[in-house]
Image (cartoon, rainbow, N blue to C red; front, side, top):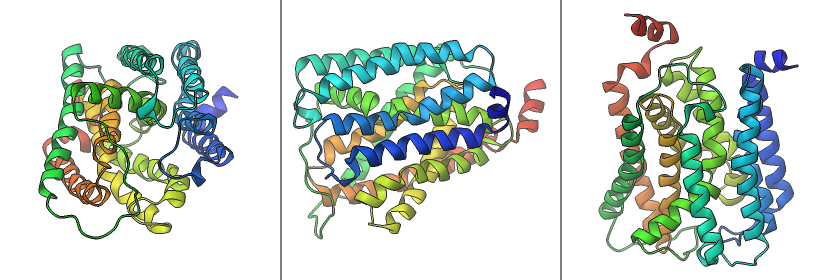
Length: 338
């Protein structure tokens, strides 16, 4: 069975990821709710669906590499079980939103976020090993810091250039926002790292599937492949709530949006020697943006468009400047042997 899964690693990863996520999202009823939703039991079921890429990555990793099974069980026991337990506590307390959680929940998310960063700073806690040489600790730290700082600066620049009177309408309702203060940033970061997508997605897409794709494809080609499926994974959410446009238009916008973003995730992972810290931080930094900007939905949508353009430019510069992103596995092996 393990050998069969190893031979069909991509298919198994996608089937498990889509099957678990889409089933739990539909069963939870979360897709029919407004964007403002309380962290209740329905949210918790949907959130476990968000963890599906990581679960799928652990299954594939266990079958592809001997000895990964024990590490997968450790991740389940010491990372995802505590996340589910804290999520259950939050879901049963009747909070109106994550902005209104009590001190126990807030400190619990902070502790969990710190533990996640510590845990995934170790290369051995990847669902699959990285096919290239690891980077040093300082390199990983600098890339992680950049992944937090650069998206923030880019969105602030996008917010500035889209200022002025905001005319027109938006399908997104105005929502409460956090104060852009150190405490507000910490609260947004910890919530989005633990329950905003990063913890569920990155150990799967970049932790398990990317290293498998890099054995057969260049980083650029691997990014394109991941981008398509990563965007499609969001389809039930985008069809229910829209993404820039409603209906099928939302699916098209998601595909366009995800392509340069997926490339940047691959690039920072590559530059950091396969560490999961930079993609975890980058994912969290991007997902934090609505926490500070959705009091003005029209301006937020315009700023998000400018932010996409900035990301596209960064991706193009990186692709042109870093030759490693275009190398095939054979050429990469040849370059390392010189």
